[in-house]
Image (tube, rainbow, N blue to C red; front, side, top):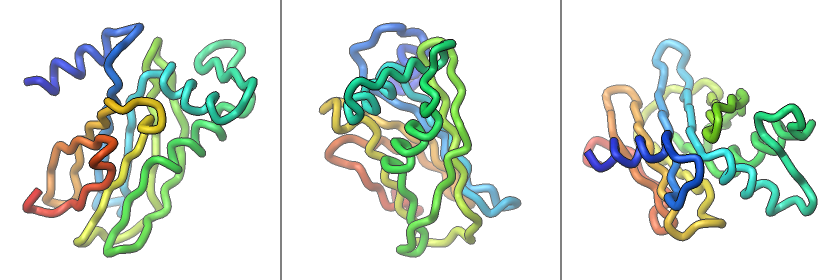
Length: 163
């Protein structure tokens, strides 16, 4: 119930005091890839990237969007989203992003692999900016379905049937 309320606040707010992202991470047994959609506040994404590049103004979703926006967004996301399978890092590919008002949808897909335990997911989006950042994930890998919350203290979660 609280998660649904937070999601409604996340979607409806144009200025926000809440620091929250929502991700959907799914392992496709047909494609043998991890497919991910990450929903973030656009201003948080811009601020995280612009802080590392003095004078940069991304202007995501505008006619003046920076020519390097795709690569800068991809670099940021790939540095803050990690998945390991059987103790091996699974390479992720940044597919792209879409902008809808104040929300940006980020798309990732892994290289092919066969899912098996143990698996670890690490998400550290915006922790460098906000102490109260929460990154909520709906994860589905094989028969395992979990809702997870990543905080600055809990950046990495081992995915198994006992979680």
